[in-house]
Length: 163
Image (cartoon, rainbow, N blue to C red):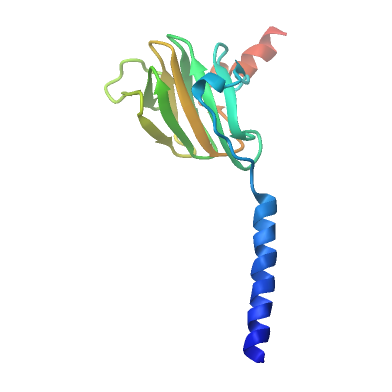
């Protein structure tokens, strides 16, 4: 009898836990690149980029995935993030470099073509730039934040200065 009671108790606990997991689940996303709903990227990055949110909310402390599209000759100055960022190049090519200042053509820079992957660990200073129009998928755990090495490079500061 104790065994049956234990099984029933375990089933109730696990069943309740399964309901909790299902309640926390997310809607599925199945989307082609052509179905992306593009809009202007937030002012965390220089003007000209576009964003399409795939899943989650990049402003919240939870999993997110977004597409970003950069025009030709676009650059993001040296910055870091408080959380890890994962990047997959989906069109074009994106060049990454490490350090305190954007340095196009530096020996340590690496250009990733379509299918290339980069992990930018939290608090590591890096920069990125394009030569042609480029799209990426960016994913991780939010909230997404850009901490520019040089505050003058932060587009949010430039906006404030022009008001």
